[in-house]
Amino acid sequence: MFQYELLRKQKESTLQLDISAPWGSGGNLQFKSVILGELSMGSGANYSSLFDVSAQEALSNKLAQLNLLTGAFESDIRLVTFQQTALFYINSDKVRFHVDVMLMAINPTDDVLTPFVGLQQLCTPRAASIGTVWGDAAFIKAPTDYHVDAKSGKAKGTASIRYSTWFLARNQLITRVDFTPSKAVIANGKPLYVTGRICFEPFRAITQEEFSGYFPKS
Image: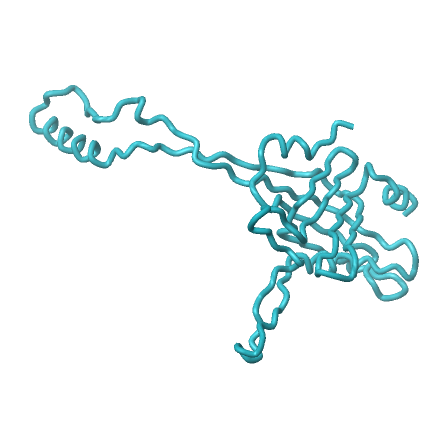
């Protein structure tokens, strides 16, 4: 227990999340937890052939049939050059992250469940009433006060996430939160600890320079 309390106080061993006014008002949402696992990240680049080979494939099939009848060639010949099989860059997948974390009760009155419930709300839609035209119909709104300004391209309702002391990413969207409360409870009936996984990604595609900026030099 003492070791956990010590870890909780150190930036090196914690994940820190902050969203300014996630529901449009009511202050910031902040979450701090002890890191259980490494920060995993991944992306990908997509390449494709831009050459339309359908017509040549049809000719190649006819050539193969002719070869079958005449035996003019020792093996099948395809009317496609190696240069035409070159791949060209199409786009890149957005980089995605996930990290496993934990909160543990230290005092008999601690509530480690509520912070995870609040974090889960970052993935749960809200209801929006659209005047009286639609009657009592409720429409789905973004989990936070998230929206992108069409002119500036800037976003509101995104998160800043710090992992230990060597990673800081701003303008992130929380895309998934999984958490598991312990069966063991403390005096107030709340779980002794809660473990969870937080998944997040930038709200838009980022450049190489922006990705490098997630790893502060000092």
